[in-house]
Image (cartoon, rainbow, N blue to C red):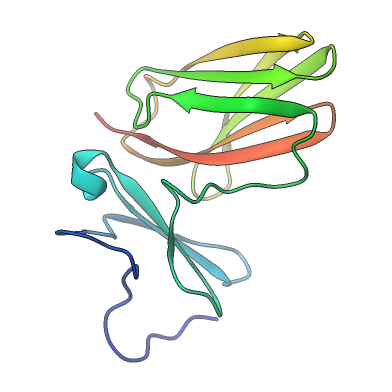
Length: 155
């Protein structure tokens, strides 16, 4: 569990006037806190990840990853922050179907896109116009491999 001791909880690599907390989320087991602000990082937006026993990292540059990523390479998404549309590009090693999910910081799935995937370059276009300003998790599942990344919506 978290207990504030000492000075204000801030990221160790913050630069400039970092807000670091217009939105916040705590994991169910209390081991991780996410703090975000759409104006941090020079107005680009940033999410700060604090975990027990480690220093804070900036999720804009330190991406959240899960599983091995051998079946999905060349993964990128843009623009970040997004407004009405988020483009997801990746290269697949197999012909299959990819599931592209969007979760809010409470872990609730808000959107699922099923994308036929071929060997080689693939693209999914997510409509994000109904999402409110905030921090979200993008998840791509392809042939048993998961990739998760943080992205922002800024209006």
